Image 1 (cartoon, rainbow, N blue to C red):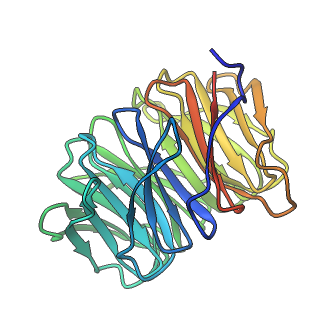
Image 2: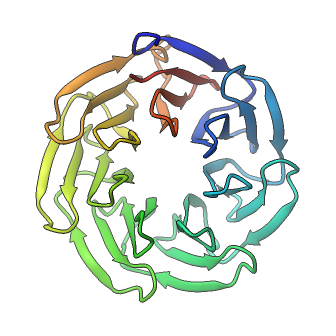
Image 3: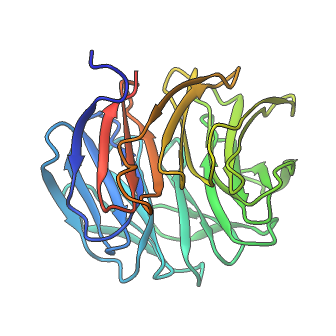
Length: 301
């Protein structure tokens, strides 16, 4: 296996900042969303473009694959979320109910619903096929920056500029847990594969990990010097990758907070902020996107 940090592929298909990346469940493709208003699907091994989705009229802020790999959800500054076929680009659903920037999207584990967060401080749960609004969560007071569905499908976590992460019942909408110890806005969050922990990154360069069931703090990672914009768990739940405006991706132990590795491949220009991070489903690679319009795929272990 290549040493950690070895660059395997660099994708140069976008004409603006890369704001989101997501691996397909089959480990072979990557979807990347960009301020150039496109989502591009490309071969994770070769970097060859397979398909470009051009139906958004604003900057794309979020992308997510369905669990079966057939569909992609994308959120945009045009105020909509789209669900579309990953191979053909044919649209299944256009969702318009937020009336503001759709900054984050996530699929339910069973693939029937999507949760989306918006700059209007709301979180919506809606039907993938019909686009019908099923629930609106209004617990936040400022822009919602991140959402994540628990692996068992029961709960949704949402992070906001109001400096909180809120965990709530996906079916009933009632607040289950309020995590408000971040001193700065929450930009990113991710649920651990076992569903027991949540990692959240904030503007102060800190990542915190806590136990959902016991509501206890596990560790705080302070390796970044600027804002944390993205976090992602390794499939085995033992490591976390965090991307930052300090132009690095750092990999660290999810329980101890011990630093494992720093990837500096994006740090070739002053403003090459890392905006997106995602582990491959097999846990061997990390994709990271930044302001230089490129996505790097590199060995993560």
